[in-house]
Amino acid sequence: MVFQSFNLFAHRTVLDNVMLAPRSVKGQAHKEIEPQARALLAKVGLDGMAERYPATLSGGQQQRAAIARALAMKPAVMLYDEPTSALDPELAEEVLQVMRTLDDEGMTQIVVTHDMRFARAASDRVLYVEKGQIVESGESETLFSAPEDPRTRRFLRTLL
Image (cartoon, rainbow, N blue to C red; front, side, top):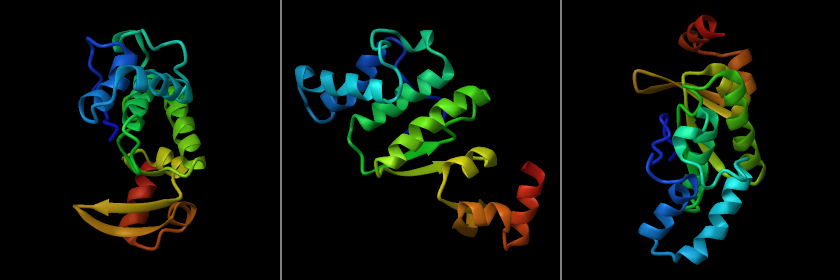
């Protein structure tokens, strides 16, 4: 899971943040996971930033480090909670590019967001949820261009 507020350990380097779970949870050896962690950092565009601390990174870089950290556990599915909520459009685009790369590689990704522009750009399918109930679901472009439920239409009208 990739959290809205990144949840990186401030007292650990970016590399240490990525290696922590495989080492602690899976018991993998440092020498085994360090090359994998560095490759994941390169994959998310953080090549050369392994020894930096989270506070020295931009919000988009921190979010990409959080994505690398989640990928280090080799999940079948990635879940993102508001991955771009605190980011300006340029940094949000950096995160979206990483997510598109993962999609191209076949990674199943679930994104919870209020940012409908991001949802439209990032998703193949969308579920519109209101008060804990699924109101409407469908292919992204169809749901955004021709929503069937009046609640979905009303919501999208106010945000888009």
